[in-house]
Length: 347
Ligand code: UD1
Image (cartoon, rainbow, N blue to C red; front, side, top):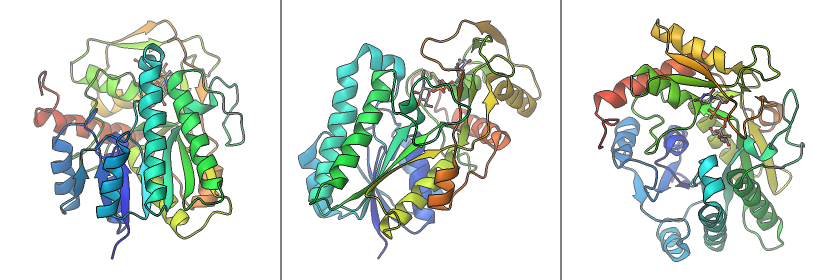
């Protein structure tokens, strides 16, 4: 019988791609999602894409009793934990909501999972835990010093997980995956990034400009110490990212790590500036996108690029898709989402 894997936030952007990757690798995903940032139609589209009926439960991760009951009914050997609030600006305005949902929810979830027998825990962390650092590329040994409540919640959950799995009676092992900038969509164009609220990230904002939902794109600063003056990031295709989760889980389940807790960067190691991303979209669309130069966005850093060598060495994984594929797949997904009316005003 296939290993069952609990996936919290399994209807979200990264979660839905993880569900597909898990099915492809022969696992049986058990989705938990409270629909706070996912559309109801994701499940039906995931079932179409994977060709199977999926188990999905509407449980908030703070509901420990609900999780306990679920894990009794559906014993899971692994957990991929992605459910979280993720807007940096909102986390500054409503820190307690973030600490309650992200940190409180994770404590409740990890506790329920370990009490039910434990297993392999893969946690969705973020490169944002490194904070404002000046380095060409970021290595896992660099200090964790987030600069906003959202980043703090990710750092705290890593710590909670590390302490929990190092405890004498722990039955679980843990891995935190520090994502750089996820982008793109599944190449079927059946799932993709589909935020309910106004997006803050570069890719979905460019897509909104390209489809005419937003008048123009604002480049947040051209006076950074980077080759063309605009911010430089490490964009990683969401399918590569999802496959890394499955690799991580497989390695954990086979007892492949020496330490009970490990943190790994997930990036490509290839830097791209804001201008280069816009140029890649313009090449894909064969037209110019309306854009203006704006001020720096508060809290942004000049460069955030991964040293991905540890994930390559320890997971036997490397990102295979480049910027062109991210742009092409994001654009194909946008076409499909619009065709289905997903992005009409009131859906
Ligand atoms: C942001 C979050 C980060 C989170 C990540 C998830 C902030 C400060 N950081 O990272 O915590 O983990 O998303 O994907 O919100 N840009 C523009 N114009 C725009 C939007 C973005 O020029 O309209 C630029 C930004 O200045 C940056 C780059 O594009 O240089 C990427 O921005 P974004 O996609 O928002 O990601 P991050 O800021 O890296």
